[in-house]
Amino acid sequence: MANDNFFERVYSIAKQIPYGKVTSYGAIARALGTARSARMVGWAMNAAHGLDDVPAHRVVNRIGLLTGKFHFEGTNLMQQLLESEGIEVVDNQIVDFEKHFWAPDVMEG
Image (cartoon, rainbow, N blue to C red; front, side, top):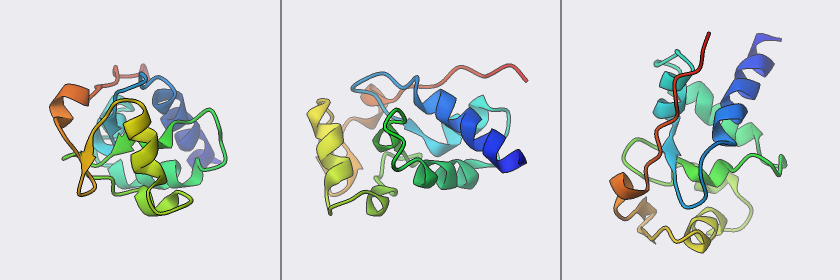
């Protein structure tokens, strides 16, 4: 199924996000060559829960908001995971977002 392949491509990028760094749904979409599919990247990240090797907590929106936090168990698990990696979060937003941002390389077709 085409969607499954897209999700797998999203996960392959998410797995590359370094410890202590974050990226955005849009940055992943751009790296895949599908710049207008940030929402689908979000769906893929929501579906990643239960996949231990996909660090979904490291994917946030374009301004550093933890928009996916409601898809994690417990009320603050996404924030706690980020803070355990040294990323400060205040009011559901990453402090010094630019400092923590990681831009994925563009994947070959």
